[in-house]
Image (cartoon, rainbow, N blue to C red; front, side):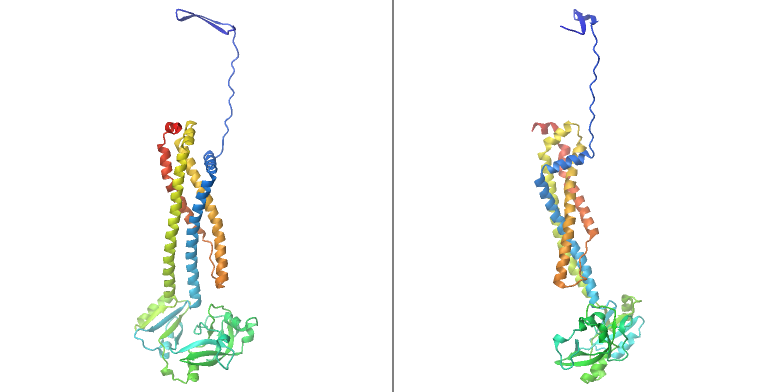
Length: 431
């Protein structure tokens, strides 16, 4: 029996100690600890991948909710803007309609007085029983298929720029907008219209008659409605010779005023209301625009409520599933605690897992959102054949919705995080 040291004991006490040999001390070799970058994110991602099916279901639920609310709000916001632009492209943005409060007929003298007011470019009135059916090159009789409907024949030409020809100098001369001229000649050169005669057809009761106009100019402007420009009250004087009426016999209950570009329309309306208290003045297109805004606002509110319900239900689903996930993995979390993980570390792992789910859903939502907007624009173009009516990507709206969803996700994590704080490590290991 080989020994390095001998101890001699007597009566329970050591009485001698002899060292026979001394072996060199071997120090244990220290292993280098391997450090990982972002360990909490790595562990949360590994936990996420361990239940791919459940994680995928959560992403799809959040994706659909986010996509619904973003697309719904984008459509309502941008379509409202497009509708307003379309309305004001059909009606003059500087126009003011007026009529008597006591249903009295307007007169040319009244129009002359109003035109003399500061800031008024033109004053016109619409005859009650006369309707412009359109213009065409056939003189013999009116044919709807060969007549171009005119949506506006009262606009002033003071600030128009001419592409061809000159401005009217007599009552039977007109200027066409560029888009109207293109509709008349199709593929031909619009300059060929200069000097040609064209007939404007008017209906009075059941009788349809024409006025011969001469095209003397074409503007550079394109208009939503086909438009021609003429001198003040030109059609009233010309119809007098066609239908043989006296100027004092005409009846008109609706007039229109055009405001100078340097003046505010609302200021002119206030000025006119003071000077002409017997007449009611209203900005053209304003009531229609307000009705459109109110309707779209109601639709927007309904879509927003449904979208909020969808996203709230998805977030409630996230909170519930993450709570069940914590319960299912509580033994794993308890083992992590035994190996030195603190409560705060475990809270971060669970929270990061939820955040990763939401971020993946938001990335997918962005990709689908772009594709849906492209499909909607393609549908609008094919359905309505309007190039200007287009829905754009609303980046601020999308970021705002994503931010709100992140905040709600954090709120949905309160129950599982509270469960972790109250979790007993020993009891979790026993189960």
